[in-house]
Length: 378
Image (cartoon, rainbow, N blue to C red):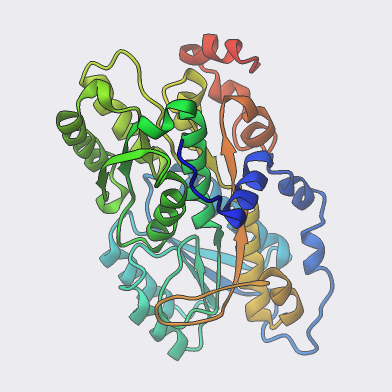
């Protein structure tokens, strides 16, 4: 490994993420985070509890959106509004055009606030402006949208890439400097992609040999699989030491390509999202790691931000948005960036199981029973 100067800030942030076990979720469960919402800190709230939060999510291929984000946001809105508030939900199913139509319907229906996970950050800007003109606040959720958004809540996406890259370098060990690595990046239209890629490159460049890089339209596993086949043909099946994969969906396509090529073993492959099938692949050793992004904090705090915004509870809102970010169209956007956790075989129990994302029974199906037993997961 060469003597690249250490990235002090990156190393510190990664150390926190690698050591974490999502204990912040326990704080939320115990009411520490909820305490921000206690009491009415505004003398004249804009609205009462009878509010409608519009929620626009991007796709159904990413398991977390349907299974976790929507139900968590719906539950938190109900809790914060004494069951008087409601969530108007729409899923774009990976179509930016459909998401724009759904956004317009939210405006036409005069919802009180919109949470949007934008498929096309730039393309959604005119819709954000229309909402602004209609007096409807817009909070960017998970991805930073352009236009006059009021706030942003997501995970630290640059840290996601840093954790993936550092995990891969550490996994390759003393062979890292001579290891040929393929990069399977996300969708260029997704603003998170650039941040994740930057974080990964900060850790990989100068530490490994990056021999091929691919962008993946619409985060499609099929596109990732096709690109991985190209990489295998160009570099050689047995010459690829590892694959940096930006998400679990892409990792699935990458691993399929290796299997179809007849690989006797799958080299280390990274991921992101902690999808159930990815956690199972980590258990079996087919996938090296994934990044667990605690859904509970992101979703529940997004709901809090939305409710507090329309109710004029500025103190609580400000307490949840102590970070700030810039988009290509706006500066100093109030934000909350939730930390992430590197999930490996060694901390499955302390992360997704402890946080009730999955049960041992869901992970350790008959197909994975022996692998679970081998790592003491029972």
